[in-house]
Image 1 (spheres, rainbow, N blue to C red):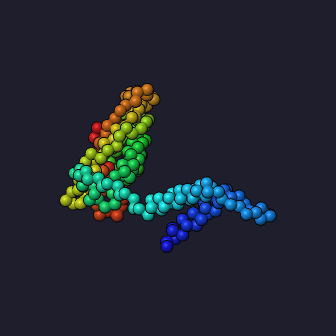
Image 2 (cartoon, rainbow, N blue to C red; image 1 turned 90 degrees about the vertical axis):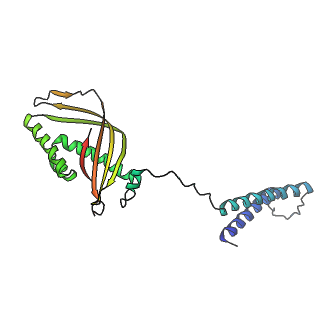
Length: 222
């Protein structure tokens, strides 16, 4: 007899005692002999039988193995096959991080924070961003982005080069308010009251065998 059988037996005994107590009552201080009528005896028997059947069913349900969830036989896409080759890669976690990096880079670009950009961009892309920032500073132009939300973030392409460099392209669809101001604060491009629906495709790279988990942004496209 297993521990579960013993536990069930104890519960049944307690229930039987409670049923007997409710039907027969407690013994008074002065003993009295109580006799069950045939009708009461049958009633008690039916109650005990019902309780027994309930517990037999509950034990059976516990002991029976749960049905296994059917395996999804849908074949993997070519992109997912590539992603599965990247050690410790998780699509959901990657996209969440990519969204955070998108906002960090956008803010750093608008604020002229080249130190942050240099850590997150490839040297070639960093040079392009730096040139734009320096030209804006020379012309006295400032940029502002009011980020509203992401409508979509989706991996659209993945590949691994012969040099074991993983490249992942992500399509971001977001709602933003973008404006440029001149040195006097006058809006020269964009509209403060107009929310743009913008699609960007950013490509990130990381060496598969790298000890660093960080991905570097190598290109941006509208």
